[in-house]
Length: 98
Image (cartoon, rainbow, N blue to C red; front, side, top):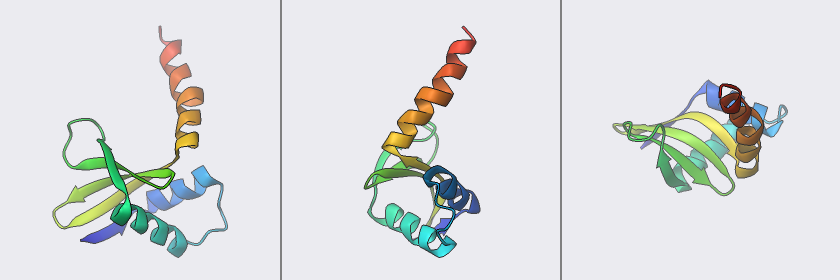
């Protein structure tokens, strides 16, 4: 299986881990390892094609499985970062409308 890492996933890794000094090759190796050894958690968005949230160690990525290749669409960050983002960014936006 061929694994493709998008530039967006690399940029999100830098943004969400505050690691501006990490090279693209190191990030690609890490994300490739996540696709190979990670666990498929849920479909993203639910019930839509072959796009899955894949968790490896303490972080997650979104992967689109098409034919014989896996395309890493984005880097979601660690569980701690995802919880912080949901609590501070998503929930306030949802509550402001009601």
